[in-house]
Length: 255
View 1 (cartoon, rainbow, N blue to C red):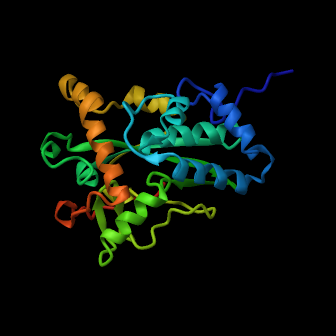
View 2 (cartoon, rainbow, N blue to C red):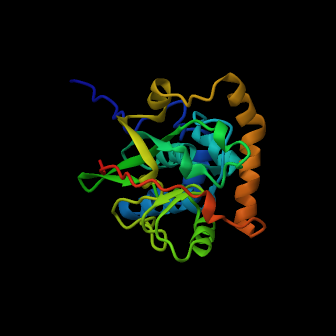
């Protein structure tokens, strides 16, 4: 009798460490396994979107348990946590890798150092196997409070590429789980690297090109500055400025 091979889209990895105690405990405490598939996906999606605030971790390739401990993240790190939680409740998922234009981060990146930022920045969204089709999940990146700030800051414009958003429908972006694709940075995408079974394999193949010195500065100084700006925007101490937003009209086809 042949042993059935483990499903690679449900397996834990170094980054998708849903077998780590904090993640396993979270899954049980929230009672996610007892929900229907639709409810499980929605509850986990909402947790990652709104209980893990938008912010910048020390690196893209950190384990899901570290993202949970940080309590904040961006597209790649929040995606890692989302994938780990989904696999932990039996939802098959994979990663789709891209780059985004650096203009999408303008406003969060201080103007003084914006010229030093790489022209393209690693980006990803999560794809889930739901009812026989692959559904793209990207709308979890910006928490609702931060998104509301952007909507209030740009009430007369539906197109925004800046402050962490890349959308043509800012007033009502497709960010709520309803069984369909969700997006919030899609219009900033430049390169499409295709799908990967795990974030581990994606970051092994593609690494953000900061250079040694810029990498050290990012980890120890710049990201903290960016996080301070995000916090200031969230509480109204810093006002968003339309002059630093970027026009980027290219929109990739959905997978």
